[in-house]
Amino acid sequence: MEKITNISPDWQKWILDNLARGCTAQSLIDVMVEKNFDPMFASAIVFHFSTAHKGSGGPVAVAQLGSQPAVSNVKDKIQGNGNTYTYEAPRFKSGNVIHTHDRVIQVMGRVEKPYIAVLDNVLSHEECDELVRLSQARLKRSTIVDPTTGKDAVIEERTSYGTFFHVNENEFIARLDRRVAELMNWPVENGEGLQILNYKVGGEYKPHFDYFPEHDPGSKVHLANGGQRVSTLVMYLNDVDEGGATVFPELGMTVGPKKGAAVYFEYTNSKNQVDPLTLHGGLPVIQGEKWIATKWMRQRRFG
Image (cartoon, rainbow, N blue to C red; front, side, top):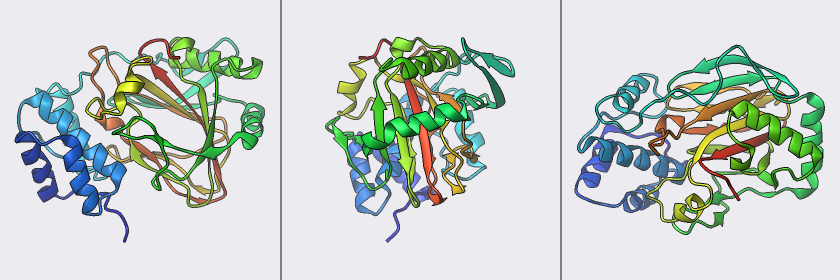
């Protein structure tokens, strides 16, 4: 039976009522998973409502993921009296082009709330090919952070294979790390190692957040090293025949993979608040395969 990835008004009310009477987020997630909800979706939606509930002190406007009318409801809540997330000036630079020490990168489009930038010419085709070549012999099944233990866990909702390169691992990676840090306007030393992922036909990553939910016990070990993640850059290393787009369900927005291009988004402000509108996922690959490189930045020095 296919897992449930949408939320009805009755379920929204159930989540809010149980949060109001003091139930833990994890207990609600467990019940939803038992009722055939997708685990990643259940975690994302409960965290979304629990964060809003804490900020507002009571019931909040609810929204259905993937439905366009819901976007205004969520934005009103986030920008309104609930103070769940306060938008600040983005870290990302203004302008139609971004100049790094060795490359000129085009800004193809921006979304202000949440802050998202679609970019081109981040990597050359030769650099994309070299990242793929260096990664092929190192690939292992991708994992997630277990929300309870904080350990790496393999789940069926993430069907990619991947590897990491340490920051400044070699001259080639060091050049990319410097360029990416300049592009993201954040220190090199605050970045996690570059992650490479490969998705075959059918491979996908269900909607999730890149930040570590503070209510998850397993997040503590990760937050202790460098603090919260603040921004993400997803770089596309190949053209995909069909499928494989990055999707932002709350916005009804997708970004198709294009070799050398990228999508950037940020989600943690100076008040340590996190932006639930950055819920995102990787759609299934229908034809061909997908290779991406991801850089996550932290609040402080990482490692």
